Image (cartoon, rainbow, N blue to C red; front, side):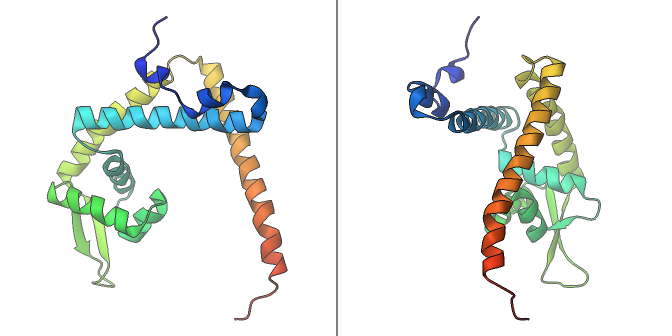
Length: 182
């Protein structure tokens, strides 16, 4: 079986596996998740650049706008993408310059800009999204449907566990600070 050159890279998980006794199972699991996520993201970035001459941030921003019928503000997009307004503004400028995104003032507040995909932007995003879906399927093609279902379920449980752990860590701090004055 041929191993792609990208899989031969020395990643975080591989480094930890060189001395497994030094690392607990939870740490090795986290490193494996991080390695998988990084491999997928890097491949998607490469394919977007090679096939569409675009970036993952541009694709992600267009995906958010594609979901909206009425458009979105920079603030709404930055919240959904979990990045700063400045990051969104820079990406939007390029998309507007390329004729893929339209920017107009909000009727209730002319200082707020509403962003929408142009017809050209919708067409371009549709082509990218169709390819993206195929790339993701290709990347997971080595897994059987039952394995995908099981992994999805286990990652859902992992996500719930993470939320609980984070909540447990932050709740005592909130309770200790006492009531806030209005």
